[in-house]
Length: 297
View 1 (cartoon, helix red, strand yellow):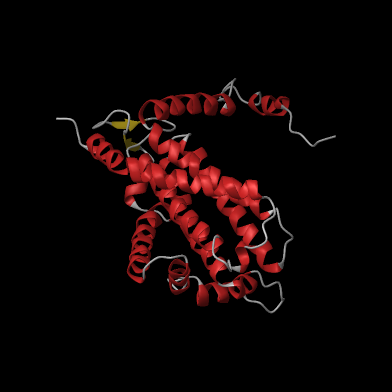
View 2 (spheres, one colour):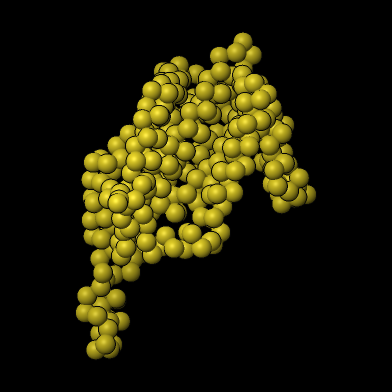
């Protein structure tokens, strides 16, 4: 029999004092109601951004499935685990978007960016993947992180990945500058900051431009589209790099020996969809974002 705590136990606690409420808030009902409200707001006012976020989810779901079509080695199994983590992160970000939880979504986006760089380096350097998942008792995980990942030490390795995938040295350097700046902004959602604390009380509305949403469990804030387009953009660049490397005569070890070509086609399709839709619609989407961000006169 599965271990359970029955509702009667809660009622017995409430019965101990006349000052306790007779009925408690239904968390399940409250979340279902919130999800319906946010979904309607997204479909009515934020559909393009949500669609691109969904394509990012689709890419990582399919890319994770692709990892399971081959026999695992130490390197490929580590890479598969990392892709599974990225899939989990984009799914979670999507759920937070559809619950109107903007700041937690941005906090996960900060983690997503770190893990995306880590996956990229695993593609470029199989030895790094082996060292990262080193199970030897003498292996110091914290020391490895400080020496090879943290404090910007991963950037030279990430730069090598971008150049190997076809980026110019100038474009690769620019992308790293963007990552540095983005992480600084997103860190305010991971660690306490005045701006993110304020958003716990109120958020600038996307559905009602110029107004502030107060006393809501969740809301489609004006920062929500930027979160969606950020995740979609990073997925697009990562996917394009993966496809470029996969199509080489000698792909990196982490991208070899896939068995099910149909799954490969799904991965390539998601990459192309993101690339073409963002190229076609990015300018108009940005103009719409700026228009809605202006305060009403």
